[in-house]
Image 1: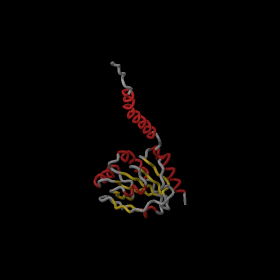
Image 2: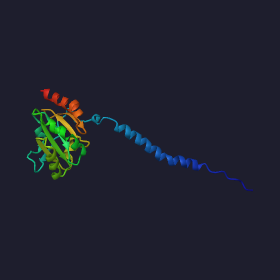
Image 3: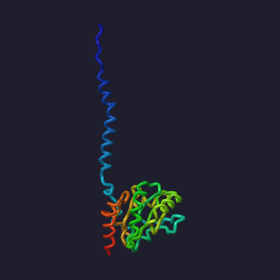
Length: 191
């Protein structure tokens, strides 16, 4: 006696299972896209209101500026910018830093992160050096202590050495006017 065998159900289940990785990928892509639409300024910083970390950075060889340490953060409102010559957004924000450096009420300090000295010197030579102090952070340790997610990032430090504000990403004309300058003015007004 021969009986007809019906086709197994497994192929349908297999076709659904082959789509599962695609569905997971699409779900993760959607979550990633939603996350990218957020404001990077809303990244939390545990250092706001706390003293700047302890650090001592050597000067960038070949420029006429001293190195940079936490001792330099006392007595004057300081804008600390973490930058690198290989960072495209750093090139975009550089004119804003040069403009900001014209304000003699503040001190500008740069942390040059994971950069080649020759490249950093060319970068500052090409666009102008807005920094009164430049410290070299060859392995990124100081940037980690500052809580840096990636370059560029900018901090406003009060006269008492406490971090008052953190700006993530490049400074634009809009962020200079709407975020950076108001925080600098508030820091200058605080006694």
